Image 1 (tube, rainbow, N blue to C red):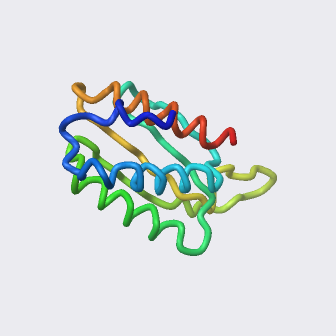
Image 2 (cartoon, helix red, strand yellow):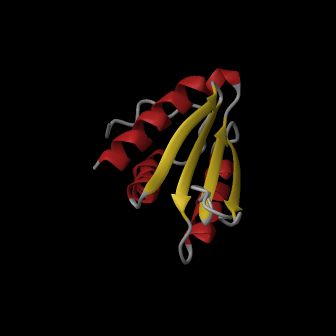
Image 3 (cartoon, rainbow, N blue to C red):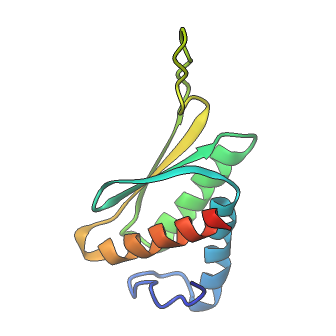
Length: 122
């Protein structure tokens, strides 16, 4: 999926910089997403292992992306719940990133989900 035709016209990032930004996202996705889910038609949830610097990297990249693609809304958080008893919480110590779009950009979210799945499979 190296073709950037899925990038919408509303993106204000200069065309020459788009492959670099996509490469940054690809590197993040390839670094070990734990899971990807689609809790709604306009939302993706990516869960990553939360290691040194991961949270800052995700927040910084999301902030830059929001600056050129205002149709994205990014929300991050860290699940710090502890395992109790014999039940282990599978999301404890992980960073989550929710990516929301408006209805007009659902196809962009579809393309992003496919890109994340492809990067994680490599």
